[in-house]
Image (cartoon, rainbow, N blue to C red):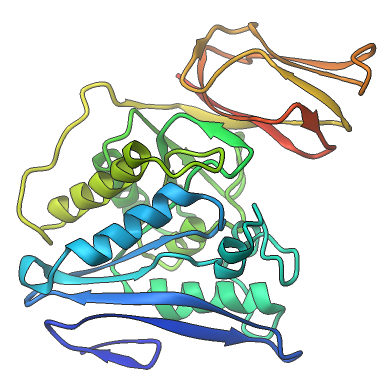
Length: 325
């Protein structure tokens, strides 16, 4: 029998409950946890969203999955957390948990004896996702991020089979672009990310990215919804054929541009735009627009995956994400 968060799950169960997390100082938060236990045997799939509380399409899709999938339709079990960072969601605070100012997706796998965010991350990894055979962590562009849909998988440091299974799941999600990240390497690091921490437990995990800039749109919500259902079909959890995307491309590298100092960010490209090596992507100037601090050029032929949507930039900000074609 599957046991998650001290709940014994039986075939045919379907429910959602709020789970309390607190630290030694008495700071409390909670997250909603749901179960859909199929009437037939099959794998356990964990679906999480809302690691960043203002990334809304994944949250909407996850809640829709909970309400629309019935145990009679399912082989196996879905365990899900629609709003991992509920304090951020409730307070409409981007990126971080307002209770301690930490970014969950820099903090995984967490610490059982740490701050409220560290304990929350530990619970989500070790008491929820670790109980599954597969994991999807739904993301979007945050409230100041504008993106074109793509999916990540992690290069496991321990097991090539985990990497390859995650790669297949990322492709099955059906988005136009698929890329990998790794803890250390030439591309963007995924150190501290939920899907990377789960992958290092030996559980194939992916992070699809759809939507952004504080919007909850039916189109972006349903892209996540259909992507997750595609994964379930691939795993034999629900009936139906996997929908293939003939436009899909696997990217050879993924990297980000960062602001070297405070100033004005003049973006010259849009998400989904294909660029050539040497093309001007952005210019960072002082606040008067007089002094050019830095010009950013494409390192290789690439596609723009997301851009920061604000005019103001702060030192250390991620300005843009680029996938090398």
